[in-house]
Length: 502
Image (tube, rainbow, N blue to C red; front, side, top):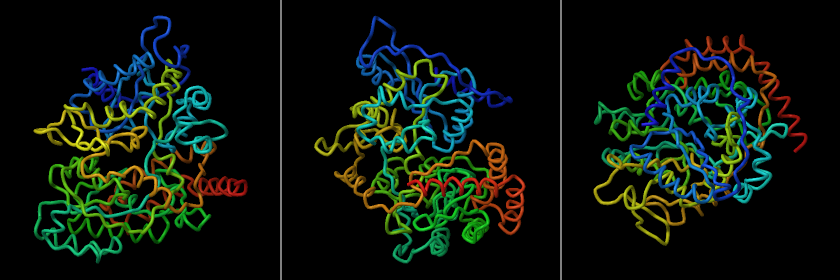
């Protein structure tokens, strides 16, 4: 009930204008590194993530809290915000009186929260309580998530490299005899979509959405410099050190033109420009043939376990690239208004080192939500009679949770999956900007205006639902008026200084 109440409250808050910044919350003394101390009541750490709320979430919280109360004199309150409104709801929690301690975010947003006084510098907290974090990532990586000594977040333990790819339902690839070897670049999908659509006229050929996992952002092969709005990027991340306006590039024009052509032919859903529905939901309903996504050794099984379908995957590059977002794209920060940041840090660090808690968070309860299929290799499956449709708890968001490398793997996974993930990371080439992060504080007004411009035009262009001939000139003019040249110039200046001091 508490989760439903919170969701309703946040939804109501979003309906009215909210002003002001959070910060300045009182801080209680830590109650010790482990166990109970002086008979104090356990402190409840509110942890906010994004995803789909699970029916039996409170059951799993109870199991987790049996562990945390004994080990740390703490409890965990997991708040799962829906994908479509997570950013807005999180901002309301940080700005208002809602209890919040630790939360999932990304480097771009974290820096904004830092500049507005809504998150804490985690440096001292890590020094005191970050035993597992320091062992996993080392001092250098943690320092990479900081600006002028302010540590704004810690990364999750995931694959670092990225290979853009097309993911297609395998049953339909086989049904229509699709020759995947002929797919070398995105444009080669034209004939594929034509063939499948002829046999499946009511099915969406390519998933599209108005923000986040848009076809365009998934296809971009450069380095966005940890900026979700892409206000100055490296088009050639392996070789270039020149920051460019992606929206004025030939690549942007060509890609949006291709997507718009597909939209007109019905390959992309007609509501793509306003769609906020997660691709997993669409696919589970059997209404989706393909989507652009990033490949890594775990994605085939990850996709099958979350949708019920096998996917044929065709990468558009032969090797992964680690870029500036690889350690900042998925991070955890501590809220400024946390009532006990010490205890919050203890709990977060504990999760990074606890296979038991990680499995509970991601997969649920053994014997109820999953069974161990292969004890030696740590592989699990649904119990008899349980599936994606009726499981009580299966978050299946290992990449978003602190440390998936210590958790179970789903059935069908390579027994050496985590080892191969490490090899995948080691095989990656690096962007010239790995370790760089733009301090946007001086340009906050321009970035706020530019973000609004991107929001105004991006959903239409990124999704393929708008005519580039009409919208790109308007988009570029609005960006120029809002100060994109100043931001790119400032970003280039900081990047040059960073390169000089590497």
